[in-house]
Each structure stands twice: as C-alpha cells, then as structure tokens.
Image (spheres, rainbow, N blue to C red):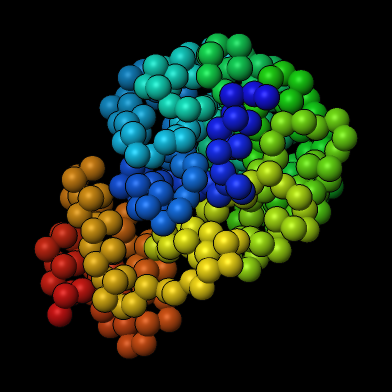
Length: 319
C-alpha cells in the first residue's frame, strides 16, 4: 500500500476540500477541517514564482498542524521549474504534493500550464514524472476529462499518470472548454475508477453540492473519495452535512446567529493572515453562501459588498 493510500485508509470515505485560488487559505482550510473536511490543499502555487522566492507564493506554503493531512498544489509548464518547486514545497513538510493539470483560466492556459497540458499528453507525462522523481513524498494529480467534447482521453491519461508514479488522481468531470459551466460527466470518472488497470485511489470532483449528491455519486461511481470545491465557498459546514448523512445522523443547518459568528470569525482570521483590505475583498465571494436563503438579507449583503474594513463588516452583521 502506498503512503497516500495509507493516509486515505484512516477515513471511512475521505472528503477533500478542493484547492481554489483566493479561497483556500489557511483560515478557510481550518474552518473546513472543523466541519469535517478530511484532506485540505493550498491555493494553487506557480512553480516559477516559488523558485523565485516570491513572497506571496512562499506564504501559501504555510499551514497549521491541525490541517493535516495537508497538500500543496503547484502548477507550471516547465520541467525544471516544476521539479524545483516541488522540492521547495516538500521542504515545508506537507503530506503530499498535487500537480494542477486542470485549471481552465485563460491566463494560466496561455502560459501552457493547468489545463493547457491536455493538448499535449506526452508532455504532461514527462512533467509529472519529473515532479515524482524530484521528491520523496507522495505526488498526486488533479486534471479534467480532456480539452473539449471531442477530446476526452482521461481513461488512457489516468493509466499513464499512474505508470509514472503518482499515488492518487483527482478527476474533475468537465473538459477545459466547459470551464465551470454545464454538467460534470461522472460516467467517465467511473470508467477511470473501474478500469481494471487502475490501482491508485481515484477522487471524484464536480457538481457535488449536498450530502445527498455526495452519497449518490459515491454509490454510483465507486470512487475512493470525493472533492468539494465551489459548493464549500461560504459554506464550510457542507462537510458536516455530508458526514452526517453518511453516518445516518440528522444534519441541522446553522442558524442565522451561528452564521454571523462563523462568518466574522472567518473574516478576522483572514485579516490576520493577509492585509486587511485584501481579506475584506476576498470575503465578498463567501457572503452569498454564508447567508443563502436568509430572508431580508439583501440590504446587508449590498453593504457588505461595499465595505472595506473588518470594522465596517462587523458593524453591518452585528446590527
């Protein structure tokens, strides 16, 4: 059994928090861990920036021991910089390193990184092997089905990635062309998992936004774990919702008062982690989740979206 498989075996059915830029910083990861996330991963980190000792990228390597099992996700397009960045990341002592071969964002793809590699599978395999060979901790990969509807080679790609030594594979059930729209195709994720040649853990990702759907997809496709991304934004208790359903417990959604307390805690922790203005601006994407379906909240939300300090946000939410 691989080191990563041993980590997974500590949990009956592991739930991952997906790496998301400007979202999965340490404060948010800690909140998600408290609500039941088993594995958490950094925001994605540029390999080029990491080997240049860029302060912002180095900051992303920091984590609290409570976050374990903890992974660092890197992205890049060059063999040397990816391998070197993996060594820098490994020196921070995470439990594993994840390679991002799935980010569809234009500025990343234009540099030949992220999902761009789906147009050059031989290069993907070479770069992945370079990372695996450069470190002594588990390396995992997160990728997509393929480039577009006419090019979805994920079943073959998964075999090739396994053959060069990755210890787990996360498959997002969309192509690069879909970005984050349309429906995730879990049938292909299931094909990867049920391929008799595959023996590494397969983690499914895409469209899981409730405990019910998590249980349904687990049973339908037989994956070894699932990863929650956008559905966790402003909703760290989604992990508790999933775990409660899996364990036949009744899930009780937090009250408005509990949401206010949690939201403000998240904001204050973020403001300790990075410059206050940056923290306040990044929190804006969380408010819709924290206060979803709360009646008569629209006016406060508008004010929160205009606030520029922690004190202003506190005043809005506590009055």
